[in-house]
Each structure stands twice: as C-alpha cells, then as structure tokens.
Image 1 (tube, one colour):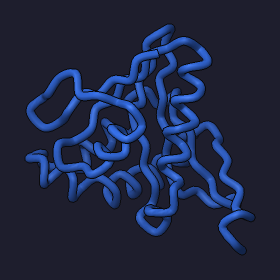
Image 2: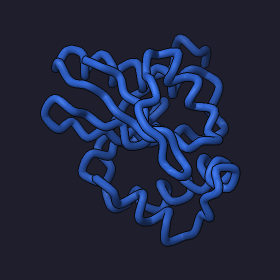
Image 3: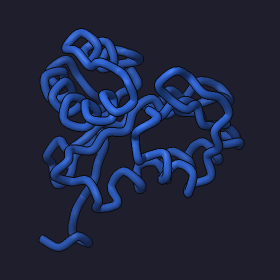
Image 4: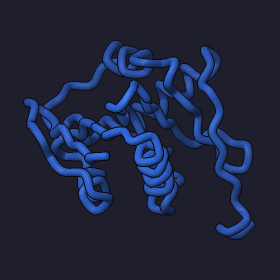
Length: 148
C-alpha cells in the first residue's frame, strides 16, 4: 500500500489503550527525557498518560494504533499536551500533519496554542517551522506559543 492510500484517523482513547500509551511513551520519550535531565520512571509515564486523559485521541493508521494526540481545547487558550508517533512511523510526516491539523482548528476557533517541549527533543524544530515561538523556559523544557 502506497503512502497516498494510507488512512489516518483519530478515536478517543479508552482505558483499554493505557498499556499501549505507556509503551508508546517509553519508546518515544525516554531518550529525550534522559538527554534533557529528566529521569523517566513507570510512575512518571503513567502520570503523563493520565494527564487530561479525556483529551486523548489514539492515532490510527489503516486501523492500527500508531500514536497519540492530546489537545486541551479550553476556550481561547488551547494546549497541545502530547503528540507521539510510534518510532516505526516517524519521519513520514504523520506528526507534522497532526500538528498542522490542530493549528488549523485553533485558528478557526480564534484560539492561541501552547505546548511544552523537552530541551533535547528535536520536535522543537518542527514547532518553530510551524510558527511557534519560545515564550518561557523551564528546568527541562521550553514553553512555546502560537498566537491566534
């Protein structure tokens, strides 16, 4: 099946997805966390999976779970909480497409969009190319914002 034939869809995460989300977080974030000075643990992974779980969508490619998109759409200040794509599917434009879609939705709603990215996460470059700017720094991360 060629790239053009692929179908990406989102569905609301459920409790049954928690094991997948824990594994996904370990696979996608551990190296960035360590490089940013954060010590990952099972407890941290579960805490991050649970944060705003009601906003979590599973990213499916041709019916198979390959990622997570978690966006809090609160009034005029939205937060892109998590975007994770399984390493087997990274580098194919899926993450970029997901973020671009959220940007379009935020603009249509007249909302600003904010995110936090670990210092050592190369995704910062993508966010900058899409118009996000660093507005503050934390010990291990940059806070970035895209005006409405």
